[in-house]
Length: 611
Ligand code: SF4
Image (cartoon, rainbow, N blue to C red; front, side, top):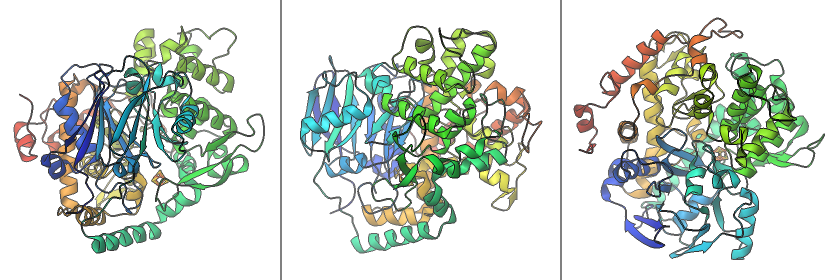
């Protein structure tokens, strides 16, 4: 029977140089669908409690979904591993065309374990797989090494996922770069790759992906494209990318400014889409087969950084590398983000780390590096830190390469009060003090404080969700909303779709796509149930790795310092608000008061816990 799964996983053990394929167990496709689900189940089954993220046993898994490589719109790629930043489950997503190429080569996923005894890269050409020497390109940045590998292979259409110097040097928030401008950014998957002495994975595939019911699938695709076409949110993304959110965040008082002390920035408009257009944009760009085309690409046209060719400064980078550091010149922000891309460092975490260092220096807790004024607004200081961290230079580079949580622990005392992270993952560019449900989402996300596993703030600010009135500042009615959004996110992340696809495509249409592509009857309900199952499974994994309820919390600034500006001026999320939301959340999830899934819940979700 022709269908969209290949039912094959490629396993590569770098310690032994062993390469083999194994069939995908039926249980995986039945209960976990693909992407995040496959990764969560495999990680839970394979990794012993307490294993270091840098242990060769920690698998680095590139996973596809059942729709990857088909005509279904707005699909991406997925990496799953244990995070060195949080010591929890990590799934991180990237666009481009690397992931479809895995499918074309004949695999539903690639699982890499072990550690090579010298730098290597992996070359996958359909069923021919080689582990090749990467000594010549070790020490090069993520973009140069991509070009060098293509040159060596004599094919510039090969798709490559690789790391820069930050991954090689085990910077805890190093990313994996896929092609020119797509990154699996959050959580440090690039450092796990570096710990395996693995510079890159290059893939070329020649097998088309079939579908079970071509006519039905074409109809479902037509429906999905239509839903995207008529969505006003998609239209806004196509027009302006995510940078248009800068004005929205500023008006609602959620934009981080000066290490999140404030929620507004008087020069925010310079960082928004219109401000960027004056200096940067030339055209739109898209991941393979995506009609949304949220990505804007171009060159800096004026000033000191003229000539840098770069992707749009998307919202999170504009917020964290711009407003949060009191930098309003978008050309300078583009320069800083491009440096991060080249070194292979998450620009979100980097922006938060630099903001933390600037405040620590202002408070006299760390010294300014020699010859540098480590102050807010100083572009040269931000650039200095990026170079120092990527190179893991003694002193401030070494300190900040560990991420904001560990850096604050090392500095000690007051530094912990303004270390902006949850479970070690640096906070996103949406301060939650005016939207308590967003705070609950950060507290409970499986990979640390993240805005992409549930984004309740839009409903909170609109004042209702499914006919339930919502007060953005109050703790009531937030748990049910957050759980519903998280289940949807985890369920659809099994398809390895782009978050922005969900701005238009309904869950019913996703289900129709999966049913017709795979021949396995899938409904919106079964996708959401898979999401609920995965959420409790990643919770079990995190608990086994040492997580407890004390880490379901927020940075101290959000719970001890009222917002000084914006529409929610004077508000914060109190300890009591947190406790109320969290206990309701645990109860509705079927977890006990300590946040542990109960035996009944596991049985209902068909999860076999490790004994
Ligand atoms: S919406 Fe943007 S990030 Fe998502 S798949 Fe399309 S181009 Fe890629």
